[in-house]
Image (cartoon, rainbow, N blue to C red):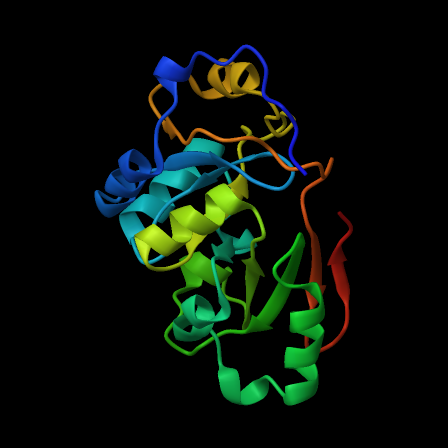
Length: 196
């Protein structure tokens, strides 16, 4: 299920408890996912989100993906009354897994999290390392590919350090077998927003 990560200097990557501590301090972290390394932070921290936007030189109107260990972690961010039983059956057929769904956003979701959209991008992961991270943190984290604008997403530790140096704490763990970031679907309209 996972690719081997070669030539890692494990003295420079960290355990899940180290990374959770960084998240609690409203810091940006990096972690392996089903396809590429991702950058993340506490989705409820405006300062952390804006640091991440600045780091990636990212358009604030793009919004972010929330990655979670289970559905209950997403409930504070979504408008459940708009998610029908038929919608939940679709979600359960793909989750946990490498698919991102746009769900109706709760009214209290800030613009810097969902890009002023009425939807929020969400994923329940089947990556054991990330699931453990979200479980220990107690809620979803931001998931955005670890790359500077204009550069390819990092798939090795060496690529990550080349782009970001060693100032961002990187969680130890293998990547999944997927070659591309997740596809994104709008659960309500059925629109394919991004092909993975």
